[in-house]
Amino acid sequence: MRQLLAGYSRFRSKVFAQHSRQFAQLARCHEPEALFITCSDSRVMPEMITQCSPGQLLCCRNPGNLVPPPEETSSGVAATVEYAVRVLRVPNLIVCGHSDCGEMRALLDEGQLRDLPFLRSWLGYAGPMSHAFRGVMQDPRVWPAEDRLRVLTELNVIAQLQSLRAHPWVARGLKRGNLHVHGWIYDIASGEVRCLDPSTGSFRPLLLQPTEVETSVEEPIVA
Ligand SMILES: [Zn+2]
Image (tube, rainbow, N blue to C red; front, side, top):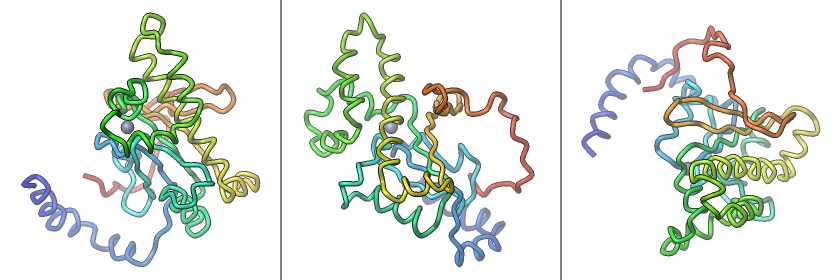
């Protein structure tokens, strides 16, 4: 807890004090640019990766960055998507998986889930494609472990995008053209984001060069 308290102390005395005007504006206005659905993993920090300030990203986090289908009306993810699209009118929805995902590893080795009934049940939403892959690619001689993990992580993002598109308000927004969905994978070791290219169905670097998009926005409020 010592680190957390020291961090809070620094936030109050330095960060908040420096940006108090922005925080005062934020207290009356909530207009995020995107809904960012990602894993609970503490190594994935959406605001840091995108250099967003408070108020710019609406984050929804859960183990494995899953989106239950619309039939699951009591899902917190569905409620967040509904609020983001219908109330906040967020124009972009991002599903972001990541490297070394513990939940994807667990899907490849069900033994890890034996004593974790809640997680096992939740991972049912990884989708039939992901579960079929697990069965087909069991042989480690054919698929090295890291390749299986990478492909499963990609398949899972694709499956969650399908589930997201099936939500009625999302489907409506996509049809009207005022809503866009994106599939991303974040690599922890390199800091690189790869995105799903809808024209090829494969993942490619989000930017060809890290400096491809020049920005004139002010420095974000992130640690
Ligand atoms: Zn994860």
